Length: 194
Length: 136
Image (cartoon, rainbow over all chains, first blue to last red; front, side, top):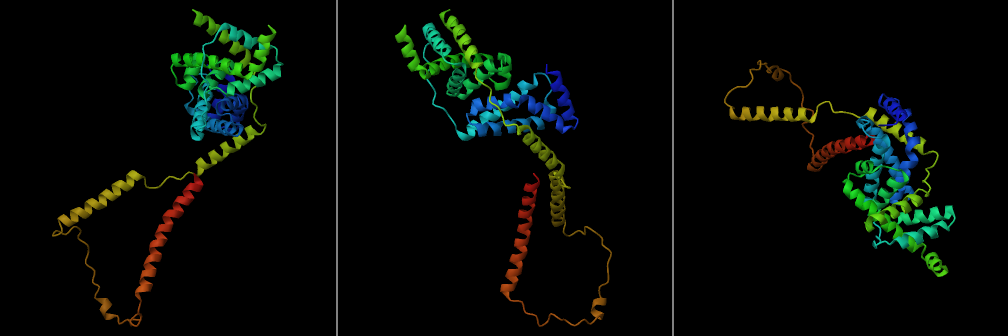
């Protein structure tokens, strides 16, 4: 299941060619760092988590059997290392309440975001995503950004599939609530114009 | 049904906008710093020392000593080992002058020497753990 190139370099590292690990680091460093940042919300801590993730991966590479993608296996390490880091800092967020969502709400938030320049919109969405609870935030990121399947997310998080589905649904609703709050002035003026 | 319909809309909304968020980028020298740490880790594992006598070995040795001690107490009337008899009477024939006859050691000096010896052995334990930590 693992990418052939990954498997080749993994075999090289296991056979003693330490430098081949650099290929794996280069291939996955941004993916690992992004997940760590989405979870810890701190650049220095994410860098630390990324470093720990790759060192743990290197030490345990012989335990990787290739039954899943190497990226999923690496993601699992990064996810749990980030959780440990969050626990260490007790970096808990104030959570947003989830309200029932109407089609009208989704439509108006979508229309408002469409009216904002792409770069600015991405920045707003990033800020909104960072305000979600870390578990929902990471699941949403894995599912939509890295296009991990539900099965892969189950493997990474050790949660049940039903639980992942519930968290994903909650995360979407909460994200919309946060987006609405972030772009509230625009929404008011949008409805005023209508 | 209504709930499912909303789920689809929410799914489309999230898919559309989460994908637009730029991925965080690491510094260029991240890979080299990782490789440096890994090389350091590998070097440490080369220097990792293992004790000559394992914990299990020590346990057996201590058990053996204690057992033989207990047996010797229990059967103290019996001779455990038949050692060859050496005649030390030749010491009496050599007339060595006792040079330490006039030497008087005060209690303070005696305590100081004992204390020094004790601290010396304590230091060995500290130094051992210190060097072990350096090699970890």
